[in-house]
Image (cartoon, rainbow, N blue to C red):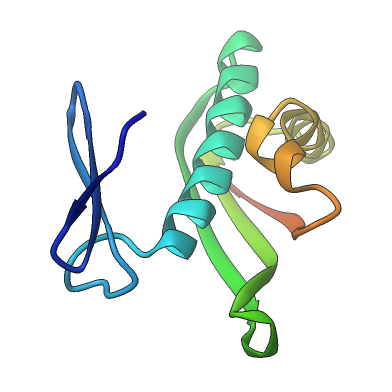
Length: 130
């Protein structure tokens, strides 16, 4: 990847578009937002692949994040909580939890920040058929 200077930040080009990065969110994504998005996106992508391989019947998967930053350490990200909500039919809570743990082991972004940023996952299951 190559990054180029622009007013109030940096930019890079991808096949699917331009990404603007800036400490001021009026001009682009803030670096911490990209870090959180990378971790949430990677985790969800791996989790989804596991569910699809198991032919799990689910309709929706969402993640809400909470980020704790340390203002005394250059606003360093201390922890990220990922709150998963999965909606589907006949979802086994124990199996879903094991799948989430497996996705953590195979998520390159979470593995890259281990020992530096505390990442916690929480799972809520919404059963659509009873």
